[in-house]
Length: 246
Image (cartoon, rainbow, N blue to C red; front, top):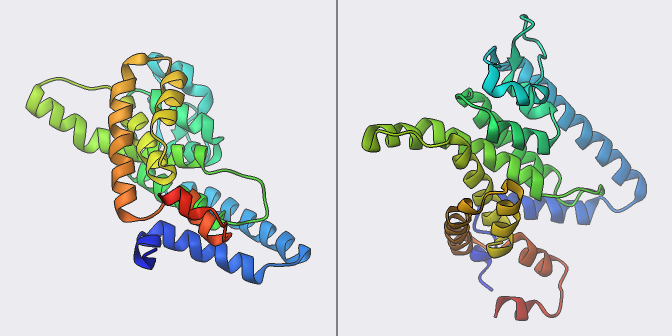
């Protein structure tokens, strides 16, 4: 197997180095416990101080967004009817963050969306890689992809639709496709993830755009490196790994 192909992406390279370093250096129970405490503290610091630096306060909880008002945090915003977008993204559970970003009308602050995408992806793919703590990649990656999809939809895709086609598209659809693309690019899931997200949204019409998005995400990911699951088979020296690549 070509080593450059094996680790030919930044996130995969950092994920592999982090996982390998933990496996070689953090071997006893005490060091694992200390590592969990340190990583949890760092994540808490990021989740608190980033919204403190970039609160992105808004007060547009209109009637259309009233059903999603329970998903937002006021944090340091001074007015009672204001909420902090950045704090809501970082401090809410990932499932609530996904629902809020996908279903809320209007535009989000672009800086808060990019910050959440970058920091959350860093924490999900690198800081939590190989840590002695139960966790997963699916929902954190979905939340990061939803944020980036929303950013792309409101800054690039929707203005182009207005200019070229003179009509609006639902920005929440771009958020859904962004989440699907990021998860699909990492996990290389196509049909199964299409069905999961189609059932989660209760909308069969999203099936085709989800399928096309996931096919291209898999193609791009495969052209760059192996999937994380196959990478782990190499790292654990599983004897039947050649069958997975045939």
